Length: 251
Image (tube, rainbow, N blue to C red; front, top):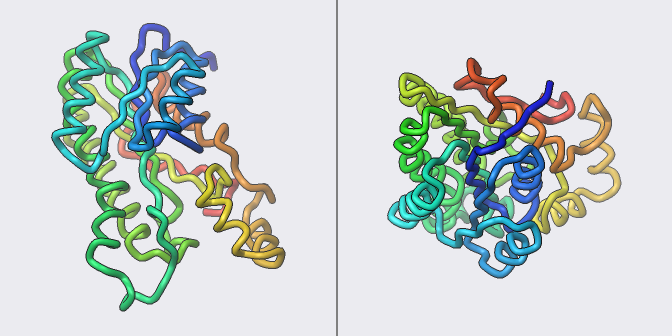
């Protein structure tokens, strides 16, 4: 299968590090013009400069900022074809008893993992419909399908919400000619947070995790990016509302 995105415009959030960068690079390699987005200006701009991509620095948890960023991208290029909502994560939190979780701790994870994905999809729908092509891919998690390895209640709940949002957007936007799917990655050592999580397991915990993966290896950013590239392609035109687990068989 030969997948190309020549003349396609892609917008990828969470691209200051890890999976977001891997996805952006894969789309660029397939011919797309890629706009990368994140709130971490120094890392994002450094990556964008090195790869010849446009950078959009903003807080996805603010509806006005998310809408403005999409409008600016679509306005510059005259269209928007692919939106990958990869921003998210645990925002520096660790697993702890529910009695220790503050209101702000709970809200900030939802803002990063769910609110932003909705605001961006909300803004992207019109230019995608106008251009006659639209693919929205949300990066969920195995934590959106079962309890999280992180032990962070808000993260588990937010990723479950993102799975539900994916299915709802598929129903709402399908009649407009747009598809919405999600990729649920398994454990990938792609950023400082996942590195700390991996180290916290120790040798025995790491061995147990690997033994539960059918392929007996951790994933890579390229594994996740390859799934996104397929779901964004012409070949995936009749796939929508699906949650693709990319986890080496752990699910």
